[in-house]
Image 1 (spheres, rainbow, N blue to C red):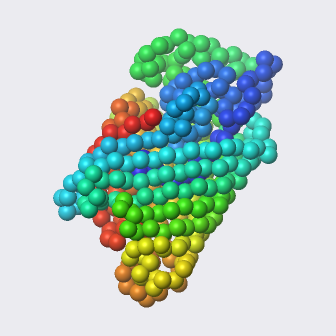
Image 2 (cartoon, one colour):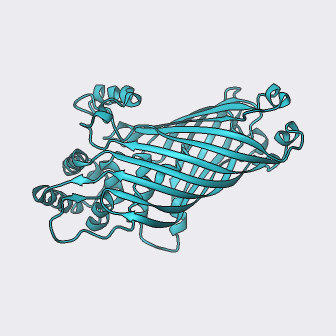
Length: 383
């Protein structure tokens, strides 16, 4: 996965249309105001908020200027070498393109945003030798979302507002990005920022339609349905939700033992997000169509969860993981005998700021006929 976690909840902040700060004192500041008004680079805000999956796309929307290449900025490419558990190797390319087409806001203030958005998502893996593609699945879809995001604002005073401005001035004076990410000013800025943020709750209900296939398009199926995404971010490390995020406890221990953190500090930004879907699937060609004996549609339930957490903030090394589960209720005996009625897929990766990553996947996806384990080493390009 990019690891692409299919988080339509990646519109968590959905704040990009917020006006810049007014000159008068404020009692609260939202994150889009903070990034847009101060001109802070995306790398700084990503580092300050420890790069949770749910903020990356919106920060890019705020901070990336319009250009002829704007569409490509949402395209991520991973050049990879795949090795299966049987020792089969293949060079390949993973791609993800996640594009928010438009936002229409119903409510838009510091602590509450509601509205509708439209998204185009492409996700796939292409091997240079098609017949040994170890993860042979392409997914292209378009979706319409109703979203509601509440919380995540900075509860501030005049003195705190002044402190942020002073830190922003010091950060802006550092030209070298590596020096910037290692600077004590950024650490103070990040600590001050997260200590004042409130918990954020996000819900996304969407209608979705798309095409799933293998690389050769011999296995194709169209699907449409609805899905519900839920996400919770406890930005403040002193929040009880952050302290009791048991999913991050092993990584908090790693950060503590490696002196990345001075104390045992689980991240509330690493609370897993979840997604539930109900689809009607129309198999167009291939084995799945034959197994369903030419029935037009079948019903499919799916669930997904994912999270991202830092391993080393000094070196911007992160761990990502996701799990997807698919189930066809009421499947025929023929489908069940071929183990095509229920299956899961797990992916985990370690990513580095240079773009190098290593990943491990196991299980199968809708167009896979067999489960497999795949080890991958590659290089990620963010356009």
